[in-house]
Image 1 (spheres, rainbow, N blue to C red):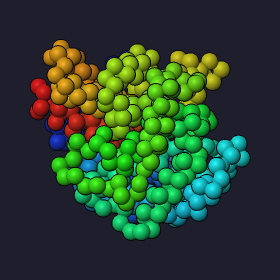
Image 2 (cartoon, rainbow, N blue to C red):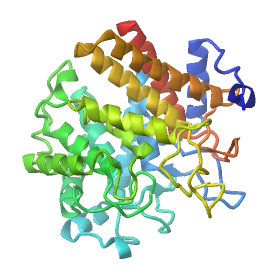
Image 3 (cartoon, rainbow, N blue to C red):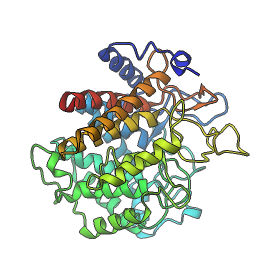
Image 4 (tube, rainbow, N blue to C red):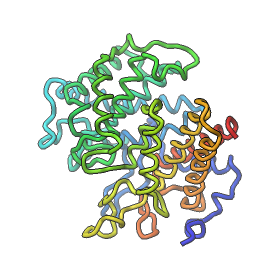
Amino acid sequence: MDHASASGASFRDLPFDRQIGLAYEHLENLRQLNGGYIASPYSGEAGYDRYDVYWLRDIMYATYANEYLGMYEKVKQSYGVVLTVFEKFHHKIIRGVRKKPDLTRAKGAVVHARVHPTTLEEITDEWGHHQLDIFGLFLFKTGDLMKQGFRVIRSNEHVQVVKDILSYLWTSRWDAEPDFGMWEEGPELHSSSVGAVLAGLTMWHDHGYYDYKYKNQIDISGMIPVSERFLEDGARSLSQILPRESASRPYDLAQLSLLWPYNILKDQFALQEEILDNIERHLVRAYGVVRYPGDRYFNTNQADPDGNEAQWPIGLAWLSIAYSKLTLQAARTGAPRSTIDRFLERAKMHLVHLEEVSTPDGRIAELYTGGQANHNLPLGWAQSLYIVAKLSLRKLLSEVA
């Protein structure tokens, strides 16, 4: 099927600024007064799980578009919402510091990944909420913002919450014990979760891994000290899992987070290429990227899930961003021009593919099954990653083309 005609090529044919404007307008429609983003407008009327609520991970990725557009006050406000949730359930974090949660009986014992957008109360215990990548992303981005000069950790109370998150991660043995991962399934030990936490801890450790990219050297390591042992244990664990996502998954869409935003493998060029190659060869489909082989969520054949998985357009945006990052890395390290051009073409290709499967007015669905989008349209963090991918490629072309 020509998915340009199926989904409308009109959005792809619009001028650059209009594409960004439309995509951002759809994202803004999901933004709430307190600065968070509901996952999608879907309220659950057809019997499916409602998405017009907050997922902490979704909020943090959804606000990335604001940063790439220079709207830092909105970014700070979004992270303020996530921090407020952690403050609200600080008692759970403290309880987890004292005793590692038993994931077989963890209902009510861990900070939930999903909350009500107004009251910030927890909604359900029905699936796995022990998702360490949420803490990793929070640590990574708050540290990054602080190093850019934006004070998102502003009070002694904030500092104590973050310190207790570090203690919680230590107690839960984030580098060696399972969690439910980005897709809220498991528990298993996930490379994407270990990498997320490692990136967050590395950002606060302030020992030079990320510091090269900041214009001003703002030392945040004294505010929330991170043990060198944390980093050593995490790096060792990650190297033992990779290139797999977990014992049951040889590759997974979630692993793209290791390349962006975390860039935790920047010194391992071949491993980055291997992760990208695995995802492109095994998971890319006509309407998006399969999360992992045999994924049963919205699968069209539960009895034979392999080959019938849902296809996620957000994966195309993520691939484009990852290739833009890799292209820039290759250019700055003196790679052959043929390598740079190959990576650049991949970044372009995946972005064009994404625009082909968007709606004519620039909305990006959560997923497609049987060539049809599901009810979560648009998906907030997919809208954000599209904007990031579009702006990243434009910046890249100005530097290496």
